[in-house]
Length: 60
Image (cartoon, rainbow, N blue to C red):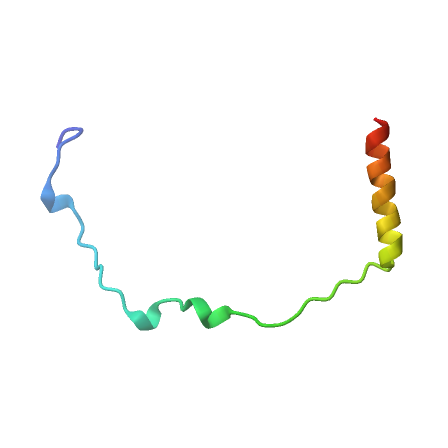
């Protein structure tokens, strides 16, 4: 058979029937909960640092 030729007998049958039991359920791996993050700095310290960063940007 030459390049680019098409022969239906070479085509494979693909089983397109999907079994719902084998499908992944989107809610199957959902997680409910909370996340807490502590960086050790108080809100006032963070606000002061933010002000310093903004002031540094104004100097440039």
